[in-house]
Image 1 (cartoon, rainbow, N blue to C red):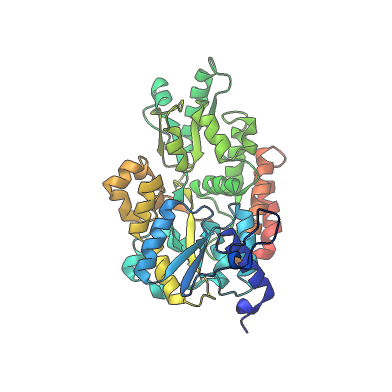
Image 2 (image 1 turned 90 degrees about the horizontal axis):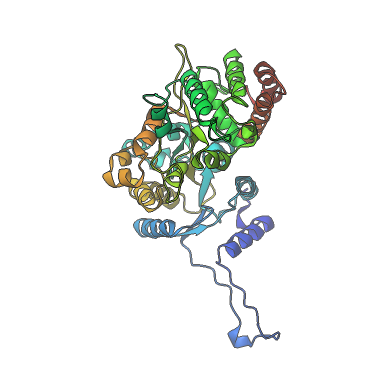
Length: 443
């Protein structure tokens, strides 16, 4: 039997959500006395029918514009309810109210790695999409959001790993273009670092994200996939770490203190960006957001860098591999209005909405055709490189296939990988230890 809104926990949670969104207003007297009865504030609940969208964390003017347009299109008001900005807090909130089967929330904004975790509570959107509509999105997002036979989310935006490189320094040291392989990157990074160190003791060849967090899972999966090595699990959810994975981890560990700073083992995105944008690195792995910041007024590297796909390894199985990120939109199974909510999800993730976000703030769209739009290209200078990586080199983390255990598996993985980077263990030891700890969660 559904718990619905009659559950005390669900009602209390809704009160907190509405309070944070400004939907409940309480009057408080400023004169220290009781307010007259006729002036007392009254709590007002917006009339149904209404669709409530949990997320995004920050509701921008462009979001409200799109929400208003989509509300008119589907014939129902859509009310965004801001969720916690911290991903851990947001997922924790979802794990509380979704199992309560509350019908107070209709649309769920979720991270790309939560598809398997939230799938039991999300509507299958396949019956609500035409083949043409499905074909508009980059396939990696349909793959990522498909749990079993169900499509549990649609992408609101795209994100993908890129290699940033200093165009001026490549020319200065005689390199004709960016590296295609990790061996070429190692060679270029070492040569440029040696030359630049004569005037800048803080200069390093390559910066990336090596801290104990999800960003390290992203980097390490790219290293492994680029050499053809096994990832954490295969497409069937079976443990797939192998000797190739161990070698990829050992290779990255050898960069630390050589072409990457020792502190890279505690670097996150902003640490790497600061090193690169301040002119103290030749190469950087990061997301598209760093491009606009690097080109900002006053940036030391403005007009002195570009981006390309991440390097690949050597051998027949090698490939360029870029892990994807981004926010997804799902429909709660417990919504009173599942068909209207599905229509809203289609509208909020459609080409018109994603184009508007791209033009407003440079958010990369998850719809392939938009990268051919001249206005989008002008707003996102790295559009061609982003589109190439999304179409040809994209790699989804094993969130769908590992179900509700991805968060725990990734936690084990990035802890053990970081221990390789800090010299506490070998890649082979990490592979073995990861396998032992995640065995209970995989087939």
